[in-house]
Image (cartoon, rainbow, N blue to C red; front, top):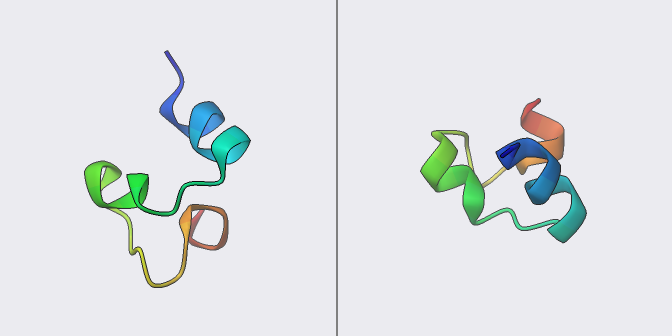
Length: 31
C-alpha cells in the first residue's frame, strides 16, 4: 500500500502528519 500514492490521489495534506511531513507545506511540496 503506497501511502504517497493515496496521498497524491486524495490530495490530503493532513496525512502528512502521519507520515511525519510538514502539514504547513503539504505532501507534494515536501517531497
